Image (cartoon, rainbow over all chains, first blue to last red; front, side, top):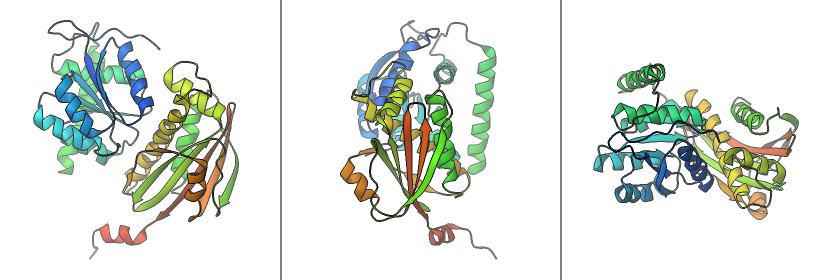
Length: 166
Length: 163
């Protein structure tokens, strides 16, 4: 797998810690490999929304990668509950179901971004860099101003859609 | 056919990437009796304005190729992650198709994929007519078994009243 410029935490220059939530063991392994190639560390894993909530509280990760369609509790409800308890939580939704209603619902509940499966590592890297950099958490090596502008523009259009749909 | 096309298009494009060669639709059949599994099969159920289930059935070599692509390492047909890869592929293909249908105004909920045993496979096909497509790939055949119906009444109930 391609290796990326490591993303590190600005406060202590340590690797970014991830919580990966997906009911598929395979998808979790695949995402774990990707975040390792970004220089990250796996803080924890969960196979459903309920476990994600307890794992978040236990591991306090820098970023959560969250699937939507899962047994017991789905990703959107889990995001809502995590963000209610931990407003600083940064969650990126990773799902094969990417219709607009779903994306808007996830963003309204507190998710910071959305990636559709199959996940391309370079796209996920840029999104993670954007989401973490936005809060001043990461110090990415050679952060590109162009990609930042692109994601800002993308986020603005999503925000506009949310306002429009309310 | 309008409802089925997104599933065909989605599988076709995903297979082209993962098999590193274009897939070809070898044949299309209608099945009314129980479905006989050909390899490793996963199913996804959906409910709402459109209800039904899709079975993705792959020859082990094709499934191993998908597992290799997704894991970024060579995977043998005997490895335990191969069936899991079929579920993940079903999830991607059906998720992408559902996204297209939802953006066209159809509302329904998709449930997580699960692996099908031979017995479950036969039972799954007993009560409904299904369209079965066979995709030929360089790594073996992939079958897509689609059984679904459209709830016109539910759609009318949810539509705004015109005056």
